[in-house]
Amino acid sequence: MTDYYKGYRISKSFIGFAVRYYYRYKISLRDLSEMLQDRGLSVTYETIRNWCQTWGPVYARGIRQKRGSAYKDKWHIDEVRVKIKGEVFWLWRLIDSEGEEIDVLLQKRRNAKAAIRFLKRALKKLGMPPRVMVTDKLRSYKKAHRILLKSAEHRSHKRLNNRIENSHQPTREKERQMRGFKSLPSAQRFLSSMGAFLNLLKVGRYKQGAKEYRQRFIQSINIFNEIVTSYHHYAK
Image: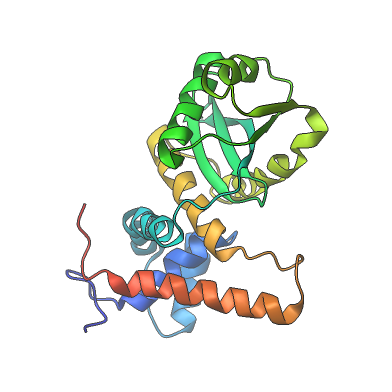
């Protein structure tokens, strides 16, 4: 089987490498261009940008299909302020008790209607409610719990939600490295894809011994490479 995507002159392994590094690490497009040059491949940062915009969501979809929806039944939910071209939005994030990102959604509001919309989307994706939902003291969650998640235990305390507070950190770091997000659709597309990449590739180096960490890391890379090679061409 050819190692090239239809319509591309660059090997799919190089494209996969560039896209994986951009979504997984705090690295710029220009840095990636230099790294590929060091490996004998001369491409501009704009070419890499196009690869990431085209293939990032495709690979993210492949990751989700490979991993399925086997999330833990304890949800942590939070929202963080994001500014795009001077306009304030709220990034709603949902993770499970292991730190796996279930969903993210950028919305203009931080109210009960926005909370309900976000949780409806998550329920549709997973098909079942959580056993426990953990939130901060935002009152909007109480209404969302009453309407959508009556069967779940609702724990509302600021310190209980430290896990998801930490999960915002990669977004903040990438936002600074990118010098801000450029538009709402592109930010939503990028952050949704980044969550899938981190779920697969960020294997928790501080939670296990060195041997187990290496094994899990190699396994995650192998899964990603299988996804990269499984596509023959890009079709929307």
